[in-house]
Length: 252
Image (cartoon, rainbow, N blue to C red; front, side):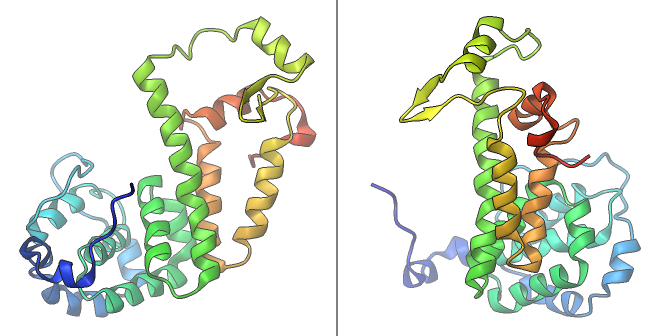
């Protein structure tokens, strides 16, 4: 049985949940005076090397300091975006902070899509899904985590099982895929390396759905990142095997 989410009533009586957002109100003036152009050109300073934050700290200020270290050498706007996501996830004045988050995306869509890493692009999609009132945006945004988390599972399994991707493809397997239908599971047939049109058709459908909302660009950016060096993953590896120009699914 899937574990249910806690009700608002149950959340209210969790002291830890309240502790996780202590100090959030003090950030409101800073967030309301956002000058996106200034933030975009300002660089997060720091003496240390950038380090991805891992896990969560109850104290909000300590956690934000850890998140900020992740953005050393990058635009201050990217850190402000991450800070808003942290506040929203900690349920700190969610309505106001989501409005700030949405306003930032509407104003700085192309910059954010082009400069955030995939982790934060997925977090943005999750935030749209959880909090936006537009069902079209929520439906479009759902494609991002579905796409990337599918690849994440495949790549995690590859890491756990220790598959040697440097080894050459087995010719007998390639011949089988190219000469007859190879069933995988539950009616699903194997992808035909080099010619298959499955991913091209997937891209066309994804573009159509993402075009329903201006912020669908986030999902398309995630799809493009999966096709690019050096993001080694199953999409990129099949791109390397592909030969038929008519069925390519990536942009150069």
